[in-house]
Image (cartoon, rainbow, N blue to C red; front, side, top):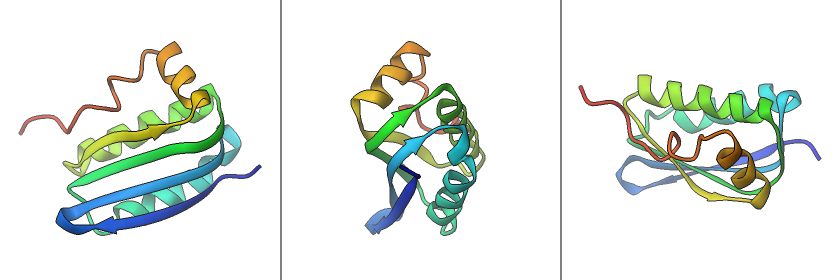
Amino acid sequence: MALSFEVQRRAGGQVILLLQGELDQDSVSMFHQALASAVDALPAELLLDLSMVSVATAGGMGVLLAVRRAADQLRCRLAVRAASPAVRRELLARGLADDLRQGPPAS
């Protein structure tokens, strides 16, 4: 299943990015499109809903780290709001769970 996404904008500068499908190296361009749509309004907080991601690979985790860096540059708090079992396994196996709960660095 290919990757698809939905962007929800909430009050207070919060944006929720819902992803569905496979988060792997093959979905990098779609993920970048989703990210661009999510951050076009410079949100204060970006929440990733990964509860509908059926496959998560090392390539997909690399993309999530790129999102972490982009959020830091935008001074945007980033967190995983929900994660499927596949995503949780990969985050924990690679020691990335805490990296995706932290806010931007202090100025």
